Length: 164
Image (cartoon, rainbow, N blue to C red; front, side):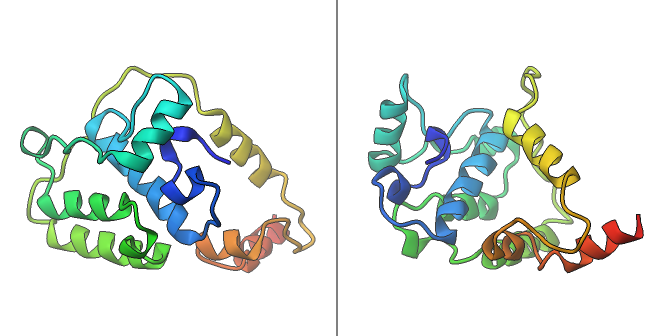
């Protein structure tokens, strides 16, 4: 399962998920960072799920936030309802973001929306605690998919932890 506001349409429907499901979630996070509000809203989780399946997110406030049109298109592609229309891997998305970053070094980048500080996200604290409790014998409890998504096999991390 997942947090309603970040679930891809195929996940809402209970269909098989793949890395493109994570691309949708990344798009939802990017949207929220720039807009200051979630891409898909509703009073209940079911309302949010329905919005994910049927509605397009409101347009990003590009003009007043100085959001480059290319970044808006990138986020829209991440939030496509059809997984085949999204970036096919995190590597593809990273390449597009790097290209966008390189091309926008001469232009003003958007400012993040300031929001009141909330308590730390519990999942973030749990992930940090888990990473501190990794075994030092070189073994890894994470899946091959998670290691690949993070950019490696965990070998370098294991070597660093052995050194102390």
